[in-house]
Image 1 (tube, rainbow, N blue to C red):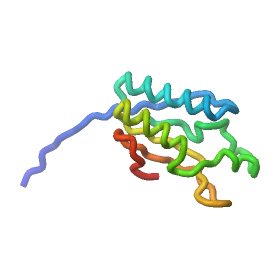
Image 2 (cartoon, rainbow, N blue to C red):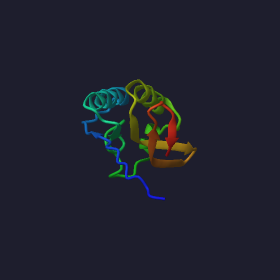
Image 3 (cartoon, rainbow, N blue to C red):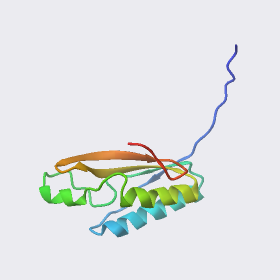
Image 4 (cartoon, helix red, strand yellow):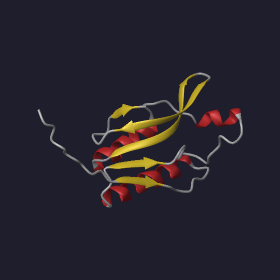
Length: 119
């Protein structure tokens, strides 16, 4: 049986932004970037690595563990809301706290329905 060659184009939006000490403000900037990318036709929007804070992995500092959060958590909830509203897939690199003392630089994939598809 012959396979039908069907191609589907997907526009990918990349959000690159400055980040400061205020994680709420950084999240708001990321949401605005997702919104703008969706308005420009993106079906998938990728955020920069560890977008919620200044990029800290250059040094090992236990003080940065306070930046970690669970998945799901407040950031995935916020990103899930904008993904659903704009009907886009969002790839978001987060500093994940899996359990006490276990931390990962994790990329979360959020579907266009707002659900977490994987990490």
